[in-house]
Image (tube, rainbow, N blue to C red):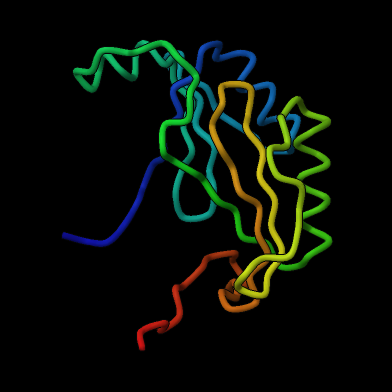
Length: 143
């Protein structure tokens, strides 16, 4: 099996609200059949109705917006970029759950949730440099 993620689908309560939020962050989406696709580097982030996503997966949707044990992360090139994105997210309607601060690994990061409660971490990590195209390669961290 290839180690790859191609799509991350976020189940949302209100597709128009969710799309507007991400577009206020500066993302540009394309809507097809009540599903919005955002190109995000080498993968796509997809917004789809939470009930439709649960039904499609054969799951009962609990309907709550509690923490689902999933965090999305965007690594950036600098500390100031972390602050800029967190500020932009707050202005777009996000809830900043952890303001940016120094991390145990020598970086700088903060977190926010989107209007549907999806958790995002924005991080600058000097140990995980980004390629020119923004892609991340996990360095050899074995010991």
